[in-house]
Image 1 (cartoon, rainbow, N blue to C red):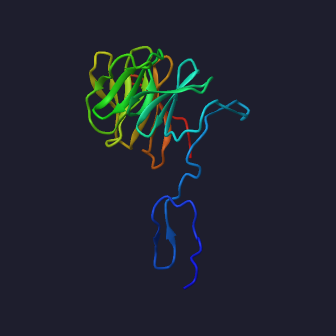
Image 2: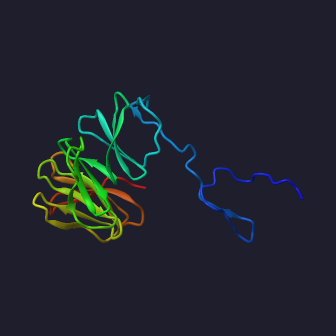
Image 3: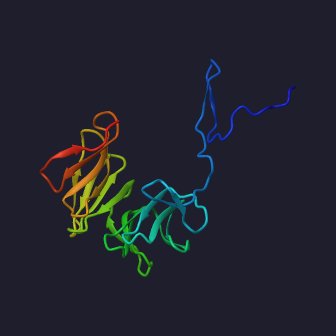
Length: 214
């Protein structure tokens, strides 16, 4: 019996071999951890102090001094100057409030909000179990944009807690983000067959403009 030899490296799942010998597999991401860096307008990177982390989501604070990281089901806060890190909550897809005082995230019971210093228990904002993802706070109106990852619709939670659908079919809508003045929203949609970035007037009615092309 011949000695086995490697034919594939960095395989993330069990491969499947077709009758013609073609192998289908999902590769690993390569290095399992990443390092945070600042990149200036000329493309020059500057490393952020701190350890390498296997994070899946990042949101920069309004003052640019801190960031929220998603680390295997936890929401962590990292100081971008000193590199120190602390646990904020259990959940995923964290975003900052407009004033940088609170963190909104997707939890087991729905969308939740907690003080960034964890001085109080999380508050339930949208009691909707399932895959709902917060994406942006409107600094002018106190509204929260989020999307349902099953229906791919963008929803709005008003300051008084009421919710309404803002964008739906045609296509799958996600990742709605308010402009600083609160009068526009950028979002992603695949209504043309490919995901593109659009901007629409908020709260409308008004124009919707594609700002990316593929």
